[in-house]
Amino acid sequence: MTRAQALPRLSEADWQVQVLELAALYRWTVLHVGDARREVVDQDGGRHLVGDAQAAGLPDLLLIRERVLWRELKTDRGPVRPAQRRVLEQLRAAGADAGIWRPRDVDLVVAELRRRGRRTSTASMGGRT
Image 1 (spheres, rainbow, N blue to C red):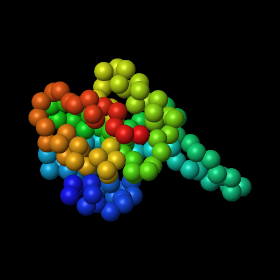
Image 2 (cartoon, helix red, strand yellow; image 1 turned 90 degrees about the horizontal axis):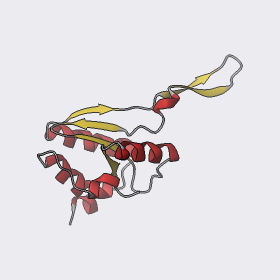
Image 3 (cartoon, rainbow, N blue to C red; image 1 turned 180 degrees about the vertical axis):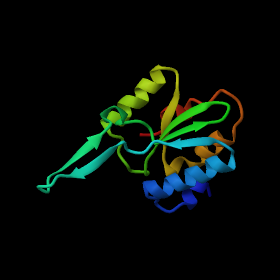
Image 4 (cartoon, rainbow, N blue to C red; image 1 turned 45 degrees about the horizontal axis):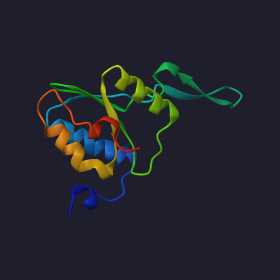
């Protein structure tokens, strides 16, 4: 049985906790890029998002060790928003190692975080969408 088969269905928040624990175990420096937008309620009760529109779509995690990884975390069935897909494509076009990690990919995630060196596998570059 793989680790992925042993995991229950995880929320994105629970998956993030597991990834952060793995990253700490393998001594990665991690920045969680939270949603820069916030919902604001006006005095008249109207709701709207404010914040850094330029940050929309940035991957959830920036991981740094002897290489740099940008990773969007999704549940096994969570959709990738168009802005997220666009930013991942831009990062890859700029030569960055950017991809998507899902709970079903936990064995790949562990292998990637354990691996030393500057080269990463192409399997992690796009992740499964």
